[in-house]
Length: 395
Image 1: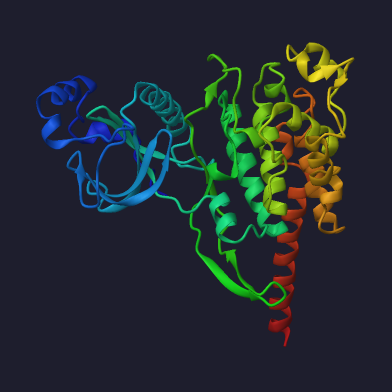
Image 2 (image 1 turned 180 degrees about the horizontal axis):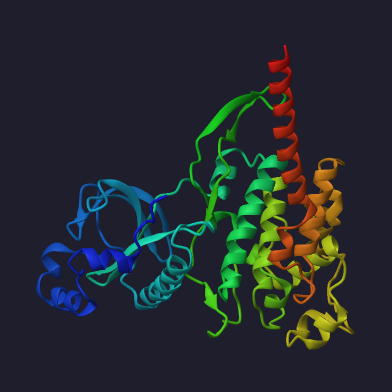
């Protein structure tokens, strides 16, 4: 397999792209004539525009607080389609992009053949104050596919394959002293989201089944090296670990908690912790997973959430009723009593351990029976196939 060129490789074989100082000079001289931003700081561009005499814009793939992601034709990669992330011309987002580029260069350096399933950066440059990063072009996120499919959950086999890939990718990050800090279904993208369609007679609707569950982990804008400053709060709310809520400090285990929440969502089609409030979030955890350990309660600075060593929570309030009606002990969410369903929930339980030091590490997750079952099934399929072939030979 040919190694895809990294930024450094690219610069050895092509003229250098404009530096920040060059862009600053162009801002004062020609920017008003050729490059404009909207009031939020987004670069104003449209289909057919060409950046750096290289990237021809085709369409918008998505938009976020940071900027936009555009599908482009890369004329220096033989007309290949790429995703170009164009950051707003706003200093805090530009600085975040510089940090993300640093992480992506480390990933390229450690995994040039993309064996560990993290999105691959091809190039980056500063375009008139907009940091731009080009990536391999991927398909729908696992969340968007779920949403467009009426939140029909993924099958147990699909969950198994996606789970294994996510654990492999994030273990690679942890092995290289990185915590992703923002794992969620939106940041797990399918390589190809083509699907087959079937009609569900009972529900009277069309349902999609993705053809390939090959995925990539994306969005390293919040990824943090072990030696760097760790922000107090990380992760999108629904995937946030208890040690983050309680401000007890965090490291690699907070990613593992997020993965546990993601796998639940793939399996059921809805979010495990559907809340926007810390106290309610902790109450949901207790309803689903049991009491918060007393050691964590003693150590936290957030004593306002507790009273006499227990969560200060009114079961009879409207919020209490909401939690009681919408949450139940984890194993009661099982859709089947089959062995592999129980194995999945055993894996999720190990990932949703309150104490970070007791939470499953990803090196061990890859050896979990849920994945061993996957290997055994594959071996059985091969063996039965060989037996069929040999019986055909005999007759």
